[in-house]
Length: 142
Image 1 (cartoon, rainbow, N blue to C red):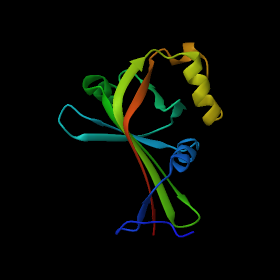
Image 2 (tube, one colour):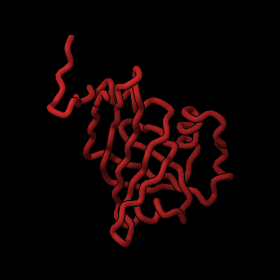
Image 3 (tube, rainbow, N blue to C red):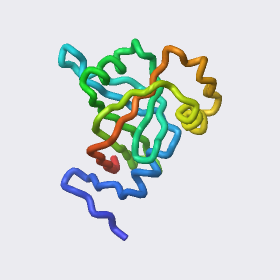
Image 4 (cartoon, one colour):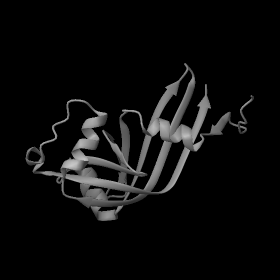
């Protein structure tokens, strides 16, 4: 079966392909808007809670301060499949903050072996949850 690609050689990922990519234990890129109006992008470990993306960060971090100020973030994860098929998923949406809890730490520990799941060890931490309003996924073979 020949895949339908646009004029740039891209094709939209199916929902199944998007989910499969997001379910991999990859590092994602978390982007927020700084108070100066510049984009702040950093690599993060993440977990999925349903369709939401959660990250653990320090309350004093720039990504946290930016997200709490604007209540918005963008998240992207990318990988290459079968040699030259680059795939990515990007989510944009509202950000909600909450205290670190054991269920969130367990989700992260399931993805990234060796994570400390003791809530007390993350006293200066905070969980940021991206609630997607827009989700896109593309494949663009080189």
